[in-house]
Structures are given as structure tokens and as C-alpha cells.
Image (cartoon, rainbow, N blue to C red; front, side):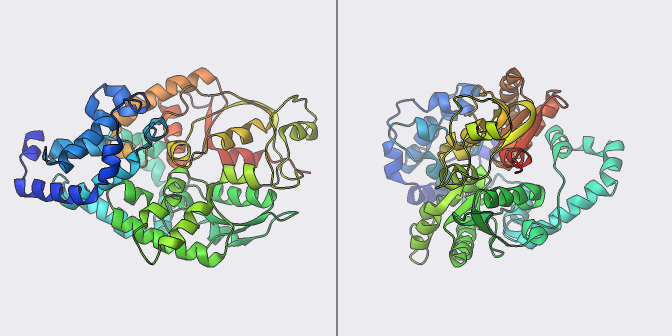
Length: 475
């Protein structure tokens, strides 16, 4: 199989080389000093120890093609696709190489010329990237179909008949941990305008996402309620659509740009002070709309406006929301919590606070894109530490990718499974009741890890927003 693909038409290889040379940012390629600081940060290099499986190695491959020293053959394409795109290499890089941008440029070029996709892969990609994700109403129809499957008894019948065993093992496992889907998204359930409770801080536009709104509708609703309690008016523009992250990471740059333009128009018209994201993977692209559209004369300025106003919900709550300190929360709950760290607030600190009814132990798996691109790792921890009666335990290597990486766990299940197994070894050591995260893909991967490693009933994976919402102090 590999030999057949490697012997593909030389003309196609030359065309890809030409596209890569014109697409790749050569300044970024030459910024790489080959120092190796990225190596221990890279999940695929840690798993294999192979230089080509590292950011430094992949950049060397890109530069060799750009310099005309090698052809971008099937092995080159494979290496570009084998990267998780977690971007843990970027904070580790002393030269500030924009590896994520180089990777997206390379993948976009590869997808324009690849001959390795089978017909059914091409059909699946076209259906997903053109027929489903850009259309919110079609995503809701998909949610409705899943809802019927889950609620009608069909799921029980399919499992009982062993039909899922006909699918690859990782697909069978993913089906088991899918949350309840919904045909009606957050706007359809609660409307699009929600006033602040108490003193108003400002107006937030909620980015509801596409998959978030189908599989995690309750999390979107809880996000609105948290923001309202912290002093924000919340609006949810109806005309927004998919962020385009899966497009950008999969070599569909043109599609990502079109989606970005629609979102910018929708939120600009809403006149918001901030744009809140509750999905690290979405937020990482939203804050880079300025780069995505930097050469578009019509949208470049508005893209900058959009990017600088986008914050993860945890950072928005901590830096601008009306939150009580952890100590105040403990007093309100009648508990002692001396010398607890304070949580910031935008003005008066009278506002929302959190308390667990019974003592719980919690830990946290970072969303790679939230940590490495949005650079927001402290805000979630401050919020968790503000919950009275909850003990926060730091997860060893919580900054390491869990293996989800968008759809990586579906396209590269073997590598994703290895990474997840190592992650769950560390999770088990926390002895936590709740494993929290801030991204839907990470959440599904953590649920899968708990299921695979026999930890169901001992630990539950939750979105940070859902955990906090359950524990809002009622005055």
C-alpha cells in the first residue's frame, strides 16, 4: 500500500512542491534555530523518538521542499498529518516560531494535490466540510438524528445486536461515550438575549459553536447563566456559524476564511464588548482570525477587532466578572478556607461565588489550544480553587495533549490511543472525583479514557462550566 502511494505521479509531486513554495512563510521556516527545545514538548516525538515526528523535524521537511532539496512525497504528507497540531512547541520555542501557522499552510497545500484519499474519504470530507459544518440548521438535523437514535431504543437495539462490533474499535468506544444530542440549540431553547443579574459589567457575545450546540447544549446554557450571574449581558447572534477550526487544521483554509467572515459580520453587528468561547479548540482559531484574514482588504481590520475581543469564558469571568473571592465563598458556605487565593473581579467583588455541598477532589486537563494559543491556563485554575469545599489536585503533565486534537483520535486512532493511555495513568494517580476540562473534544477523550481504563463510577469527566454551574452559591 505504501509503495503504491509513494510511486504516485511525479507531476502531482512537482505541483505540490510549487504550491508549498508559494504558500509557506519562509521567514518562519528560517526562524527555527534547530535548538531542540520543542522536542520534549511534542507528543508524537515523545512517543516515537523519531526526529521527523517533531516540530523541528517537520519544519526541516517543509524547508527542504521550499529549497528544492526534496519532493513532497507520500512520506511528507504522512508526517504533516501525523502531527496533532497541539502547538505545545510554540510556548517552548525561544525564537517564537509560528509552527501552527506553518502546519496549516502545509496541510492546505497538501489537500490541494493529494492523491492518497480513497473515494469514501473524499466524500466524507466534502460532506463534513462543505455540507454540514458551515450550516447550523443541518448540524441541528444531525443532532436530531442522533437524538432519535439515542432516545428511541434504537441505540439499545444496535448495541444488543453487536452491530457496533462491525466498526473499528475506536469508533465503537466513541459511540458509547457520546453525550445526549439535541435538535434544538441554545438559541432555540432559551433565546438570544439575556440580561445581567445585578450590577452590569458589559455585553458579551456567546460563540455557541456547531458541535458544542448539538452535543453540549446544556454547557452553552450554563455558560449564559454563569456570565449573567457575573454581571454580563449576553447576546447570541443567530447568524453566527462554525468557527472553521476543523477546516483550518485539515487543510481547508478557503472554507475557514469564509466561515470567519460570516462570524465577524455577525458579532460586529451585535455590538459586543467581548466574545466568549467555551471551547478551547474554537477559541484558538477565533483569536487568530486576524492572521487568517490578514491579506483580505475588506475584512482585515474587522478581523483584528474580533480577535482582540475574544476570550475564553474562564478568563472573562476571572478578569472582568463580578466574582467573590474564594475566602468569601468559604465564609458564605460556613466553611474555613484560610489564605485561599483571590479571584479577580471587574469592580465590586459582590457577585457569583461557588461552593461544593460535599467535599470533593477535582483535577484538570488543559485544553492544548486554550493553553498554548489563547495562553489561558491560570484562569481555569483560579476558578476551581475558588470553589469552597473542593480540593484541587494538579494533574501531572496536564499540559500534555490528551490525543483528541479535533478529529485526530478518529483519523490517527493508534497514536491517539497511546497518548490517552499515558494520560490516564497520570489521571488515576490524582484519585479525583471529577476530571475537568474546557474543550468538548478533550471532554469526550477524557470520558473515553475513563471508560477504557475501568474508572467509571469512581470518576466523572465534566466541562469546567458545568461543574461551576452546579455549584453556584444561591443567596
